Image (cartoon, rainbow, N blue to C red; front, top):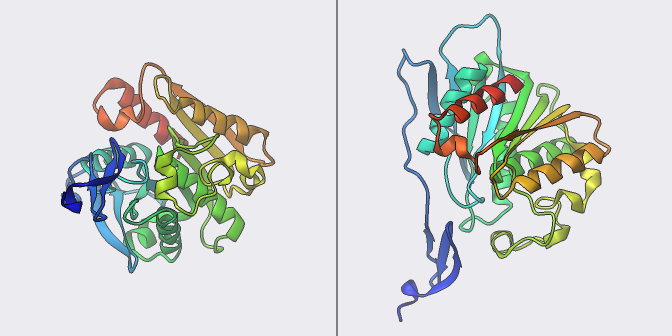
Length: 294
C-alpha cells in the first residue's frame, strides 16, 4: 500500500497523520475576509505579527467615535490546538459581535497549529503577539487602544493558552507600558489527571500529568503568578468539559493568587454553543455577559 494511504495516527474529529507524514485535518470552518466597509459597526483587518515564525492576527475596532482610548482584548481561538482559525467564519462572527458589544479593540491571534507545529508553538506565538502589542506595532493599537486595560480571553484550547500566557506574563514580567487586568476563560480545556493520547502526541516534550500547561494543579504555585487581578470562568451545563472549568475555578480560589475569580454557567447548552449558534437567544445573552467583563 502507498504510504500516502496508510494511517499512522488517527485523532477524530480533529486530524489524522499518514505514514508519509501527511496531515489531514478532519474538520474546520471556511475562512472569511476582514471587513473594510466604512458603514459597518466594526472594522477589521489582517496584520503580520511575525514573518518567521509565521504569526498573524485579525484586528477589530468599533467605528463609533469615543472620547478616549478603548480597552484592548487579545483573543485566542479554540480547536484542540489543531484546527480552526482567527480567520474562520466562526471566530470572525464572534469577534465582530463581541467587539461591538464590549466597545474594545480586539486582536484575534492566528497561531501555528499542531501537529504540523507541535506544542509549544501555539503558546510561543501568542506570547509573541502580546509582545507585538506592547510595542504598539500597528496604528489601530497606537491610536485607539489603552494598553493599561488589556484583557486575555479564549475558548476551549484557546482558554488554556490564555491562562498560560497570563502565568508567563506574571513570571517573566511585562514592560511598564502594558498592563493585563483581566482573564476570561470560556469552556476551558485542561486535564487534571493523566492527559490523553491527543495531547501527548501534539506536545511530545510534555511530562504528562506533571505538566502545568495542561494540568494547572501540577504546580499550583504558578497560579499565584497570574498577572491579572480578575478572572472570569464560563462553563456550559451540557459540556463534557464543564467539570474541568469548575475544577480550575476551585483550584484558583484556593491558591495564593490575590485576585477575584467568578464563574458563570449557561444552562441547557453545550461546548462553545455561542460559536455554532451565534443567532440564538442564549448566544446573544452570552456575548453581552462577556462584554460586561471588559
